Image 1 (tube, rainbow over the protein chains, first blue to last red):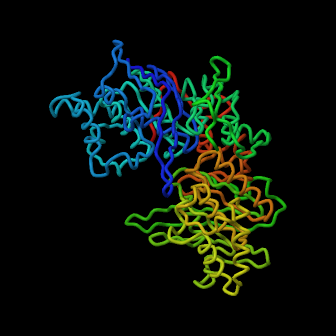
Image 2: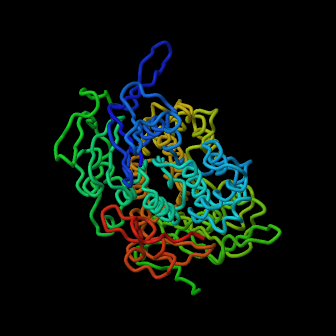
Image 3: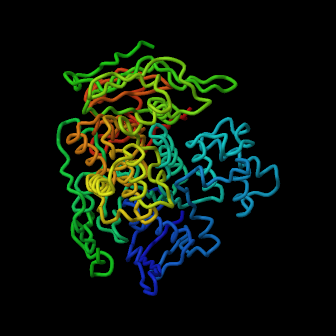
Length: 298
Length: 296
């Protein structure tokens, strides 16, 4: 099984304002591991660097410094091609990530052919049907010929998941996989991901801004704020006993009927200056330095 | 299916009604006509936040458009009545208004924050010009100074720095655009505001700020709000009463506490278990072991 080690990952973008140039550090010394059978949730608001980390993992961007090592089961490092095959992504918007021009079959057959998982039309077809069955798009023979617009949002996201599995994914990066879906079908898709993870021992990085699903869907939570991890630890610990003020702010901002219906009021005071130079690690129970020592100016 | 009581919940007792919708039916005249809203009835009281929950395609937005008479063919109001109870006295039959009366009624009495409000602003006009347009359309005699004063005042109310009034929409963040849209809806001090998914697509912290703003404004200005979203967790927190809509019908209408504690309709129960709780136990959320159901 494949493991991913991320160490001191930094990504800077050059920005220009008129003639002034400066660099924006979108990701600042982030480290974590993705292991088979485990889910790590990356939580934070828009602009916190979540998606940049996803892009770096997918090799869609090159890190400014730091390393991403994909280690195969035999202990050897995966080469670029293997990296691309083993690490697959499910995107946020199933309405945009599937090509309206092509059939469902095409979407899943293509990665199978590109990564040479199957040979010949017969075998490819068989594998496509098998993958559709696995994501519970049944009857598969009926679904293959359809185009994306004939499917609901939840069904499309299932196609996107089948497509990610097709090349033989070992590591799944799911970037807000259910935020565009109706609340009532979100759980179905998340539970599907959980089942596939159990069956294939997938390592999953679940990127979200929804603390509630992060808590229930993952083993470990990393809270990202302005490019830095400010709190990390076992899921229940981070959510039920948040230490960093940013995590506390997120927890208070999230709707929670249990809290509101029991009459407890939300002590939400908006966003004061939040320090992102330190990180609470629930595993060690200690504060650590986050990012490059000095705080990034607010 | 039994007809739910339209006066469910005690939260609104003692308040004067602001809007009464009775037996409203909206039909999309396609080859096979679709009844998108079926015999919907409810009363909205002054100063109340009424939540309208349901999944995509249940008719929430169609209902909101029909109340405003913003629906376009092939949608058609096939029956029922919409009555607006003006604070200044007198009832208005919304369905009977002619074009000119309707123009005066919309926005001044009842305004709407549209779904995807972030993108509902005109990209080539400044915020100032858009606010001015709205004011002058309804109050042509307003002086320049008054227009300016009122525009700055509403921006301040929703927490946007009036200094940004000269900005174009793309120069504002998503949360700020959303606030500008809410400011726009409040501009003429309407008695009712309909908000269609006003905070979807915003992240939780910004969403929380905007919700607080809505509740505060409601408390200060005493208007009534119809808040539409598929996010029941959110509605439970801000609404006085909640109407649950399924396939064009309101299947349950009760105060928020009752909906949460004693849901009667199976669909309401299903909605309630469909989001995992932040601090409570797991509910229907099963990550290990048990097989997930297949969605319809």
